[in-house]
Amino acid sequence: MKRTFSKSVFFFAMTTLMLSCGSTGGLILTPVENIDTTPLKISELTKAEKQNWGHLDLITDTIPGMSVDKAYEDIIKNKKGSKVIVAVLDSGIDLDHEDLDGVLWTNTKERPGNNKDDDGNGYVDDIHGYNFLGESYNEQLEYVRMLRLNIGDQATLAKAKAKLDKEYNEALQNKQQYEQILQAVKGADTAVKKHLGKTTYTKAEVNAIKAADEAMQRNKAILAQMFTIKETIPEVLEELGDGLKYFTEQLNYNLNKDFDGRKVVGDDPYNWNDTNYGNGNPDSRVADESHGTHVAGIIAAERNNGKGANGVANNVAIMSIRAVPNGDEYDKDIALGIRYAVDNGAKVINGSFGKSFSPNAQWVYDAIKYAADKDVLFVHAAGNDGADLDDPSNPNYPNDQVNNGPEISNNVITVGAIDPKYGSELLASYSNYGKINVDIFAPGTDIYSAYPDNTYEYSPGTSMAAPAVAGLAALLFSQYPNLSAAQVKKIILKSGLPIKAKVVLGGDVSKSANLRDISTSGKIANAYNALIMASQVSKGQIQL
Image (tube, rainbow, N blue to C red; front, side):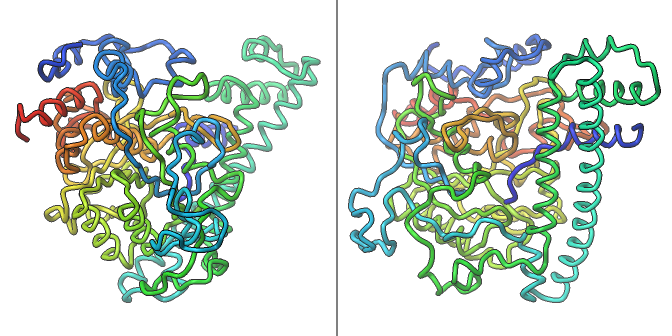
C-alpha cells in the first residue's frame, strides 16, 4: 500500500487557490438516545485530546473514541492479563524506538547474528520477526507490475492500462499544481516577512497589512487562504512539500512502468516455490519508512511511561514482519508473512495495507484460512478511496470473500475509519465502506503515535483504524485467553456503539447512510463494552 498522504481538504483548498490565485455485571451499551443527544465537541480539541482522542469516550468526553481510558479505569485497573503476540505485517518498524523497544517480540530460540536457523523454523536470524523485502523499499503498484511483466488475461491488462493512463496523468497534473502552489506560497511568505521585518508572523498580522499594491494584495490573499488550512505558514509549506514528494514518488516509482523495485531482493515474487529470500532484520530502512512504526505504536506503545502516546493493549509483544513497500505489496510476501506470524505464535495479525489488483489472491486466501485453522485473528484496513467496496468496480485485496459471496473464514475483521466528530461527519471522508466488505469502524483520522527516531506524529487512514481494533483484540485475548478468534471477532462487532445518525459517504454531502447500511455491524468499536461482553462469554454467561 502506498504510504498515506492526506490530501482531501488540503488539496481542494489548494485547487481553489490555483483557480483564484463502571459496572461489569452486564453489558452496558451506551444508550443510543444518549448518543444522539450528546452535545457535539464544537470547540477545537485541546492538545491532550488530539493526542488521545481515539481512547476517549463519546458520552464522557463528547468525542467518539473507543472508550479505552474508561475501560482501563473501570474494568482492567491493575489486571495485566497474559502476554499476547501481535504481528504487524507492514513496512519495517523502528526496533529501537523508545516507546516500542520494551514491547517487541523476541524469538528466544534463535541466536542473533550467527547466520543460522537455530530454531529450524525456516528463517535465519529472525530475532524480532522477518523481512520479506530484503533491502528494497520503493515499488510499483500491482497493476503497473502486471503490465510490465504481462501478467493476466487481455481484459485484465486492458483494465490495468486504462487505470495507469488515468492515474499517471492525474499524478502529473497534481505534481505540477503543487509545484505552482508551493512557489506562490513561498513567494508570498518571503514578501510578507520582508514587509513586516520579521521572520515569523501571525494570521492577525497578515490581516492587518494595508496593501499598497496589487502584488501585496495577492500575497495577503494567498496567505489568508493558507491560514484556513493550517495554523502556521511553515506547517503549510511542510504539507505542500509532502504533497509534492508524494506525487513525485508516484511518477518515479509507483506508476513508472519501467521501474523494477524487486530486483535487489533477488527472488521471483510470482513463484510460490521461490522462498529463499529476505533476511531476519525487519527494521525500517529509510527515514520515510514510518508506517509500520506508527501502526505498532497504536497497538502497543508502552502505556503511561510519560512518552508519546499509549497503545490500546497493555501486555503484548509486537512481531515485526516487513512485507509492505512504498507501493503495492506482493501476494507472496503477504501470504508467507501471515504463515510466519501464525507459526511463530502470533494471536493477532494487523494488515494495514491493500490494493485493487491481486494476481495471486488465492495464496493470501489460503494463508488467511490457515490462520483461521490455527485460531489466529486477522485485522485488515478497509482502504482510503472513500468508495463502496460492495461495488465490484472497487475491489480491495485482501478480503475474506470472493465476489461478495460467503466469508471464506471467520477470523477476519475489516475496519473503516472515523473522524473525531460525532454527527454527519463521523465517517472519515477517505474511508471505504460496504455492508458486506467492511465490518466495523474505529478512530483513524490524525492519530498520534510513534514515528522513527523517537519521534511522534499524527497520521490519518484506515491504516490507523485497523491497529486500534487489533489492539482491542489483543486486550480481549490477554484478559480472557480462553476466547477463540471467532469469538473475539463477534464480541468486537456486537459490542460496538450503534450509531443512528446518518453519515456523509466519501466526503460527498449528497450521499449519506446509516452505519448499519455501510458495514456488517453498523457500529464503532468500543473497548469498554467489548471487555464486558468478553467477560460474559468467557464465563459462559452468554452465547454468541
